[in-house]
Length: 215
Ligand SMILES: C[S@@+](CC[C@H](N)C(=O)[O-])C[C@H]1O[C@@H](n2cnc3c(N)ncnc32)[C@H](O)[C@@H]1O
Image (cartoon, rainbow, N blue to C red; front, side):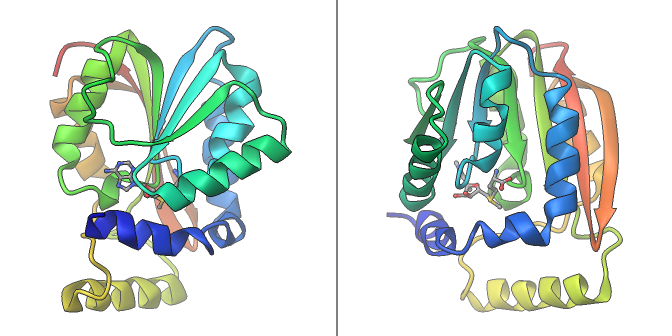
C-alpha cells in the first residue's frame, strides 16, 4: 500500500464530517453539477471518497463508475449506496491511469475536491481529456488554498502545511489558485463553459469545462 492510500484510508472514518463543515460548498457545487447531467450519461467520479456525491447524482444519469485509491473510502461508499438502494453506481478501488479505462468512454468526468492532492495534476487533466467522449464534460471543484479564507480555516491550512513538511501528512497538498485551475484546463484541451468561486469560510473553484481538442 502506498503512503497516499494509507493516508486516505486513515482519513476515511471521519471523512463524512466534512459534509457538515463544508455543507454550503458541497451543496452549491452539486446543485450546479446536476444541471449538466443527462439521463443517458456514463459518468466517472474520480476520487469519489465516501460516495455521497455519486449517490446524489445517481438518479440523474444512466451509470456512474466511482473510483478512489482508498479501499476504506470505497467500503464506506458501498455501504452508503446499499442503504440508499442505489443500483447504478459501481464503487471500485482504482486509479484513473489504470489501462482498463478506454479512450472516449465517458460523457462526464467529475473530480471533486481532489485535484489539489494529486502529484501530477497536469497528467490527470490530460488523462481525463483522453477518457472523455468528444465534447464530453469535465466538472471539478477545487479548494483554492491561496485564495480568501476565514482566519480559522487559514490557521488549519497552516497547520496542515507544517504537518506535510514534517512528513506527518504524507501527501502534497497544493496551494493553488483559480487561475492555476484555468491554466490546467487550457493546457489540457478544455474550454470552460461555467465557473464560479464558491466562498464560505474557504474558497473553492467550481468549473464545468468541455473537451474541445485532444490534450
Ligand atoms: C478530499 S477527498 C474528496 C472526496 C470526494 N470527491 C468529495 O468531494 O468529498 C479526496 C479523495 O481523492 C482520493 N484520491 C486521492 N488521490 C487519488 C488518486 N490518485 N486516484 C484516485 N483517488 C484518489 C482520496 O482517497 C480521497 O477519497
